[in-house]
View 1 (tube, helix red, strand yellow):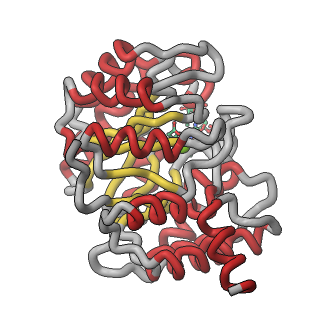
View 2 (view 1 turned 180 degrees about the horizontal axis):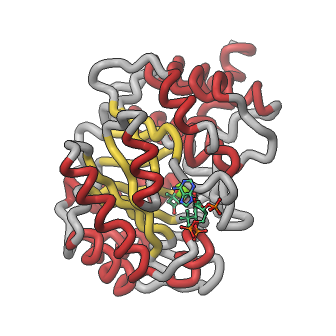
Length: 303
Ligand code: HMG
Ligand code: MG
């Protein structure tokens, strides 16, 4: 199996990571985190979401965070927009990319965005149209592509169904998300294959939470399927407020270590990335949730 020689990572820590924190994280800390991620070489950062502050209070400072970032050329800054109201607010912040997020499970769609899958697509369609008219790239996310906290099993057919709907409304790139981190490699490959019926391999990314410790294995399985783009989260931050018990995304540091060890380029400086993870973990008063970061930090102390 031929593996890609280069991989693109999207750090979703500032959004997926921090949306789930109990304690408020000031905008200045989020901005500093974004600055540190871009200094580490990340070329795409998912900064925030323009969702209802009643649903996700941690993202209420979305406009302030976007306004505070000293943008670097060549870096894309993406934001989540669940509806036109969110998109119109996001537009003022000039994102390079927006993300509409649906679910392959009806139950999760209701819990997360308060509507059915079909209704979500009706809401997304004008968002996608407006974004593309404004020259903004549109990514879609498919939550619960391998398992749902409310309905359990999710079939590849459900993934294929949602991927087709996303494609039809003009979504340009699709993320296959294991929201609750229950997937194992063959299940993930089947979800990716279902997505491949509708999207080109170059327009698919993997988004794996690490609740059951499978995310690195799932990443490798996705690489073997030809996927070369992944969402990861510095220091393993994160989870979804509507997926109880789910932990963060696979740590960016761990994925970078895996990829570099396999001779796959990322353009990321692992040491600077570890510092970024340490910065946000210090603020949150815990250790980075990354084995590679922990090992490298120990090595700095112990040699
Ligand atoms: P709703 O209550 O059905 O919306 O929520 P509504 O249209 O009936 O509006 C109700 C109120 O919300 C109104 O305010 C609106 O103005 C306001 P009121 O009149 O009551 O004062 N509102 C908004 N405010 C700000 N921004 C908006 C917005 N829209 C309505 N965009 C809605 C529907 C989608 C808004 C809500 O369910 C919501 O915000 N959900 C967000 C959930 C979320 O952010 N989840 C986490 C992100 S997804 C994720 O983490 C998964 C991912 O990582 C992939 C994976 O791992 O699976 C991407
Ligand atoms: Mg997620």
